[in-house]
Amino acid sequence: MPRYELPTLPYDYDALEPYISRRIMELHHDKHHRAYVDGANRTLDQLDAMRAQGTSNGAGELAQALAFYVSGHVLHSLFWTSLAPNAGGEPTGALAKAIGRDFGSFPAFRKQFSDTAADIMGSGWAALVWDGVSRRMLVIQIHDHQSSTLQGAAPLLVLDAWEHAYYLQYENAKAKYFDALWNLWNWPAVAKRLDAASQARTA
Image 1 (tube, one colour):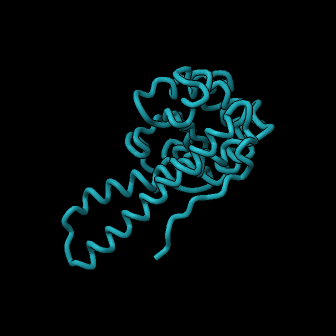
Image 2 (cartoon, rainbow, N blue to C red):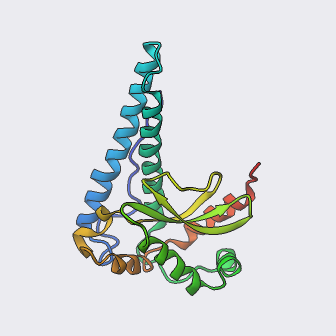
């Protein structure tokens, strides 16, 4: 059976300094992200064993665990490629036009995105998504990796607001961490996701 695999970072651990320290990247990628990958594979093994035994007892709990682990894996994989050294600034081209259309201006989008992350109670993510139903971009919160999401929405840009993403460097000043990320957003990668998502059709 296919297995989930931890992706290699597209840059060195210290490439995002001073905004994200090497130590945070090592722990975040090698420990936290790997735990989601290992949890997803372990859950698949448990589901295989359950089917081999001809039972479905506990299937609901395993389905919930699989959603948590796989969503954590997907979101972290998106997060790494949403960041880049020598990046940040403002997007250009079609992405800039779409942001202006759906949020009024880039500063308005930036404020809404950061405030959405800051308003998360506990652990979660802020995400810029393409909603295929309304054919526009929206900013949403994602709690515990998968709850409170829009079904069918494609994530374009995700911000990890869990404490493990920033506490070692920023302690409880998470707003400073959110501000720092605007120096790292990989807008060309976000633009490619928008292009692909906007061409897809939601039933």
